[in-house]
Image (cartoon, rainbow, N blue to C red; front, side):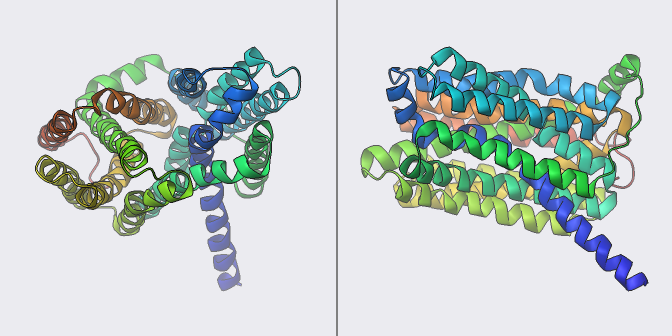
Length: 405
């Protein structure tokens, strides 16, 4: 009987891991899947190529703005309730995008749909982190947070390939049905795996303020390290895409295939780190230090060795370093506060991460014409991350509890 219950619990945890892991994939699909079908959208809606940025930012800006508010609301009304509401908003926005391609190809309706998708996406990855922090403890929490980064990396590989495939098979607006289908799968999965009878409790603004004051000296540098890391690596990934397409005239599926190496390195190292990060804070700091060194040293070498082969090799190592440190940062942040404040604290981190991913390609688009200067700036930012780590490691005493909770 005990063995049966244990097996059932393991199966439930595996299903829960899959369901929660689909949340970051949903956020990644929001923009990355659209990139291959942007030309079709612009052609049918009679837009010029300058609209590409607006189509993407109409998703990212609402998400970045709404994320902290969703976190605060989840502290008061419960994670599951806010995730469910967010998924229904995502479904509504996606349906509007589908309809916009059928009814007079309306630009305004399409942009409203994209904005609603962004609002819905605000309740995905950050609340997934907070939910894991609520449900799991110790090493199991670290493992689940590591798996969240694995799903994040998988999404970044799969999303453009999915978009390219759908661009061939269906009209552009029908590609947006992917979002409602995925949302329904998540909703069903949550109903089957998570207890939704959450209580209501009043948010204590004074307590949140005191947490930011007492632990901000450690939390804010951790926010910055995660945000800068994603800013650098997804900026350099944008440059890799540009370089391959314009220098070697490789596009479509084969260009997407080259991303498998750096993103695969990030996914594998996240999985490895999450599985080995025990309830020991010192081990977490060690992994984080190794990850930051793996990020910064290759960027220094890129200043002197910048051929395509070296570029692929060095950014693959750097992405591996990012995958090594993100599960640690996730674990430290989710374990630094109690359940009643976790949504707000984690959502600030989510907004910073999202901002880094969104701003990286924009900045590297401005820097790409002077490659040497771009690599120097990249290396300078990586050194800034190392300095922040040194600062935060000196301030850590008494900020976190003896164990990663």
